[in-house]
Image (cartoon, rainbow, N blue to C red):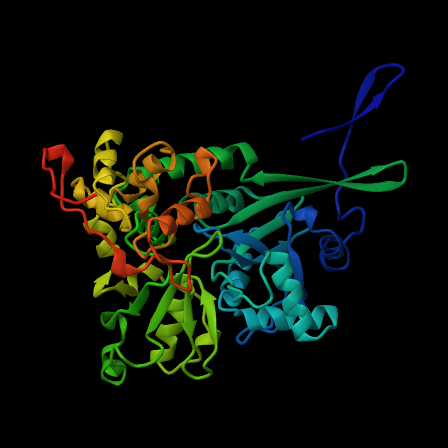
Length: 465
């Protein structure tokens, strides 16, 4: 990295040599720290500042230079907060990385309440206002749960870095997948004015892009790797194995043995209702202690229920380290097992001949409806509901595509989008044929029709049209 002063008339370029913070009599706490507090772009991250010179640790009197929080999105698109630990050095220091990692370990257990409290104290505002500011920063509604990750980001800021520091950081980045970076801050004195130039040396943007692409490619080769966590839930919903309103139950096997007898399956607090409204899929859960219902990410809620059965406050826990799909079941079957049985964890998806799908649709009686999943099962691939949905989405002139709905009788929100139609067109056609809908806008289950044919195998049912 070099800086040049260019004379536009003579067209000469002269390198401007950097100075150093020591000779400028600039200090970590009095100067560099204040710069970062005034503009987080110096660390090349967008953060909301929470504290500086933080020393409220239980077992040490050390002071964390700068603590902030940044916005991160989970696999399902749900935003959450990740603490950012910034450790400043004027020059190279062999303990730079170790010191920062110690601070990261200290703050890794911070809850959303502690983060809100820090923000309120820093900005001298009420905690209610601080919570709203944090929610706005993360892109959440103030009524939504705020999740704070237990794996903080570490930012090392200095003019120079020792080889042992950069080697350690690269190992932490590559092998442990730690969110960590080294940012070089170089001072220049030009015409009596001070300028500083930032340069993220680890990870380089180009290298990080390549590393992530490589990691994603490697992950995609692992059986089931692309369908873990929230992706399993998404896959089950997309393939019509789960639908809005389905009741999920906390798995008894996940309740600690010593308290399992106290928490039978029918005890309040062990069930939740799937909600597919909006861009993300959540579980609606009612806190048995307060009677309050709210939406939660599947992993967050698993952590809360686990805390509840252990006698802990469910609102003081995070979901870090908890894979939500391991803790919930539907109709007695674990979600991962449900996905595996349908072939969804192998990365494969059923593909059907469009004419075979049409043959099934022809058999649906007037005034009745069936589901994408049922059509897929009739064609011999129960994991092919999504494929059926895509075929029908572009089938304006087909027989009866409007008679195929979600398994709970719900009309898909994108129904007819590729044929200039909408869900209202679908409902209108069904109502004209005598299909009734309940208050939730779902076709009555009493009118559900189960196909029992396999056109690909040449079977033909005897069904009245």
